[in-house]
Length: 77
Image 1: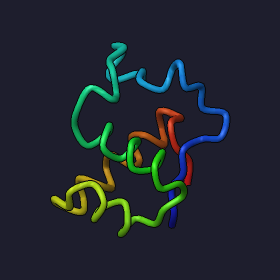
Image 2: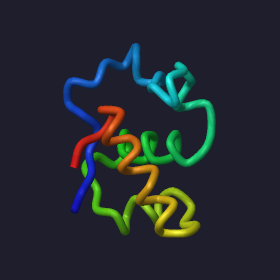
Image 3: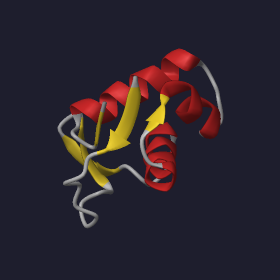
Image 4: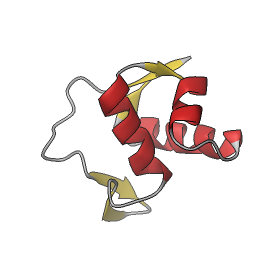
C-alpha cells in the first residue's frame, strides 16, 4: 500500500489538523510532521520507504500515524 498527500490539499491549511477536538499545528514536530514532510518531498511512497525515510522507530507507530493522517484527510492511500 502506498500513501500520498491529497491532491486538493490547501497549502495554507496544511499545518492544521483536527486532533481530539482541538486545532493544533501538524508541522510543529513529531511523526505526523515528519511523514507529511517526507510525502511532500518524495511524493507517493510505500510504507517501507516512509518508515525508513522518517527515522524508523516502531513500525506500528508509523502505521498509526499514517492512518491518523488518512482519517484527518491530509493524505490518502
